[in-house]
Length: 158
Image (tube, rainbow, N blue to C red; front, side, top):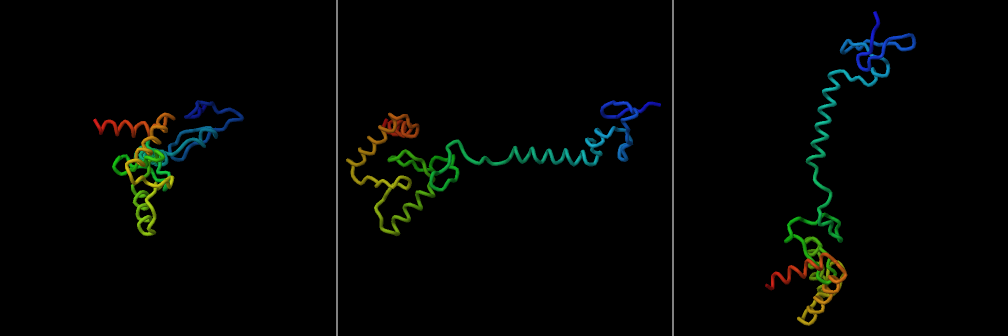
C-alpha cells in the first residue's frame, strides 16, 4: 500500500521516506515533519500570537501628533493647558520645563526669559508689540504654530 504525506500529499518513493508522528500518528515527509507542530505546541503558539496582538493593540504610542517637548524630549500632552507656547520663537514646550525655567530664574535671581530660545520676556506693552510683529513674521514664513497663535488671539479679541 502506497503511503502519502499528510501535509503535502507527496508519495513515499525510493528517495522520499515518510515518518510517523508520535503525537498525531500521521505520516509526513522530512520537510513537513519539521514544520509540523504537535497539538499542544500549536495551542501555545496561538496563545502567544494572541498575547502579541494584545501587546501591539494596547501599547501606548511613543509620541503624540503634537510632537515632543524640545527641551526634555517627552511627548507633549494632548491637553493644551498642560503645554506652553513661547510667542518669541513659536515653540511649544511642556509646562514642566516652563516651571523648571521659572524656578531657576527665581532661585538665581535672573531676568525672565524664554525657556527655549532664552530671549528676554517683554516687560512693557511696546515690547509686547515687537513680539507680535515677530509672530507675524513667522506667520508670513508659514510657521503653523504662529498662524494658529494669531488666529487664536484674534478669535479671543472678537
